[in-house]
Length: 468
Image 1 (tube, helix red, strand yellow):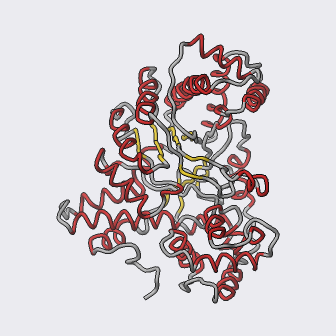
Image 2: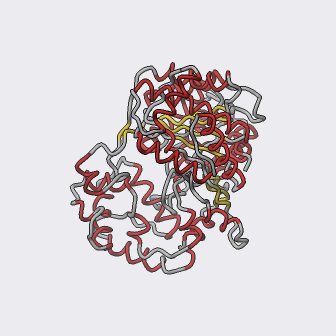
């Protein structure tokens, strides 16, 4: 039997049935990824499997470093063949790491290859994949279509022109909807100089100088309206921590003026200004019926020597921690609610030890105001948690504290055109978890309810929730 088969990751009969009869062939709504709309529009073929698999993939880079691979074969000037060999040698050491599973899911799904990649057969696998990559079925658009993708949401800065999103929307030959996501990292920059530059650029783009927090609020609203017209229905934020600090309007105005002029703020002042900006942004999102995503807890680019050598986002990141998280999360959402500014919200926690904190927090702010069930969501296990253990921990915490039935499900959070088997990976883990409940007699074997639950989590809830 092939390693990747219908029972892969599922160890009970009820789970196998749920996977095969309900989850397996559902379409994909990938509401958070880092694919480039320009690459999708231009639809250029990949030169080789190394470009497709290894370029920009910091998950693989971390594993290769752990396997003693020299940086030349990771981010350096080694040939594609040398880099693929180095990756293959790493795969055989990756038992227990989800990269081993993802690698073989991708080989099976896209390349009809059931060979288990290792340091001996790497050339055979590489040549097989490179032959297929010359076919049109392996261009970016076809890879998405073959994956069953209906919608993806990219990640885009607030000053972006969204040119390629508009071109894709005008292209009737491509059925996958490629929608932007509003990601205003610049407004939370710790660098006062960077913040000042952003305010100046924002003013130039919106046609009016920005000298006050009110003018800043208006200009940001213009960009949100621009994104909305391009099909955007989601924002995203990636703070290191959530640190809510209240302040009076006059104090916020003063802090904004100082930082916009390029003057540094203290840590407390930074938290006060960021808190006010968050509440302001949330009000705009609520007015547009958007969902607000908050991915928090990543400490990035920790190896300063390697950052100088190979740049940012190269695989030197860690799970963070913080004090008073529970209080800050509740106070932030409460401030939004008191201002009638709380939108549909998804909280993604990178530190799994806080899962129950997040799951219990979202329960405090559920309501029927948005016309969807569970408008405040506990987001799927991401980055260091998109493993079997991480996903099951998130699913169990959500089920313990809320209603798993209304969960909006999985996403790729990826820059790769062949990462969609992560949805399949999640679906197998989900079906195994719920199937296990059935077989242990913890929930009834009610096929109608179970079918609805699996469909909801894998596909239907996302469609209803995001209102694309």
